[in-house]
Picture (cartoon, rainbow, N blue to C red):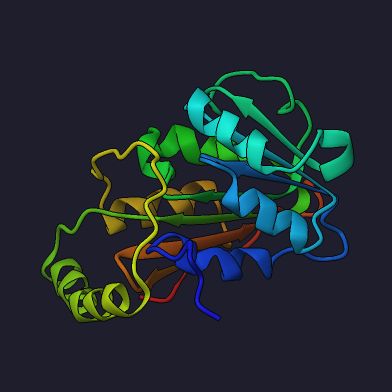
Length: 216
């Protein structure tokens, strides 16, 4: 069945919801917008899902779409800057997701903050964009155009209404930061000018993980 909320970002929601497992008691979506992914994570089995976004209007839309109070729905929302101390962010989460939001934050600071929000043994999943710098970057970017044109004609494109920020980080810069901050993360270039980065937090302080693994 066609997804009326399809766009280049929501295309990766199924990848993120598949990360929900029996141990996913809590989940956090950073840059939640009007809450589509939070609702999908909850439907996939996450016990309690919190969404955070800078845009108060988007947060109000998410609350209205949740269908009831947090105690009944398992969905809650907070308006604010994820880099600041905020209610609801005092305890780490079993799953942290963020879609097209990391480039709104300083790269190193943003990755470190996201890492700190993940519980031991939990998972961080990022869907994001990088800026082409090298010839290979530009070749990969150009190769996405036919797929994007075909998808838009066939599926349409949902307008999410969230603010847009200029992308300045290159893929190489992201890869270097991930290698340092998120050892063991899997970084892959994907369709529609997106990448996915998935990192599992060490279950214990002695588990140092591995080097960043790459798809391309």
